[in-house]
Length: 127
Image (cartoon, rainbow, N blue to C red; front, side):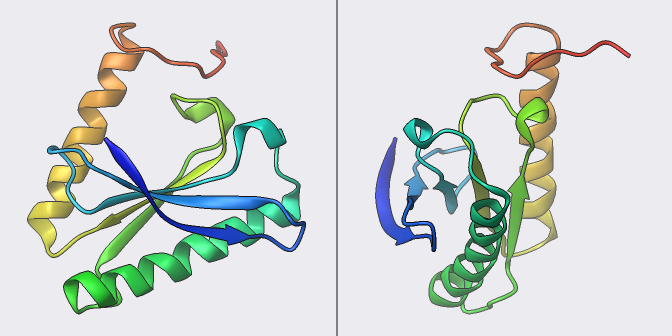
């Protein structure tokens, strides 16, 4: 379902891995992941990872689509994500319909999680 596309060393010495995710529902999907066994990234690691994600998204979009601006980057904090581990989603988009499709898929996944029909590791806070 996924393969390593690249690895990057942060200034702290910790490594981040860029995976290409092979899913039919969301094509051209990548995940920049902080190692789970490294614990929570420092604020500097997190900032560096977000900048790295943006930079890599631009170069992937330029290489694969021919437009360095044809991407979306998504980051969810601990309480808003489904899986443990720090990660940045990169999705290459070539038009409004692909972006609309991405948000439709995300809405469906989140609705299933909210209804308890899909696994969710995030803490649940009541307001």
